Figure 1 (tube, one colour):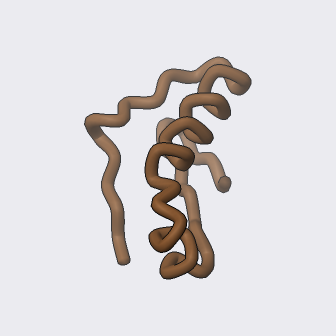
Figure 2 (cartoon, helix red, strand yellow):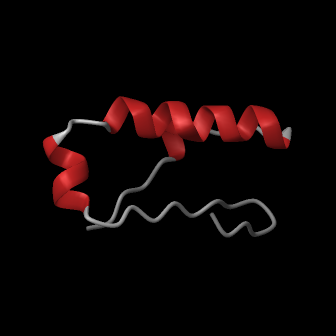
Length: 51
């Protein structure tokens, strides 16, 4: 997860496998856990996804 001043980029390889397992909730939990550990606040409402 490369970090910028106020941005975080998450790259999921093998997106088809990820979607088959329906791990979308797990990805949000991962982002939340990382934010807590890093001491920053994640704004899920500002989440943008690209395919």
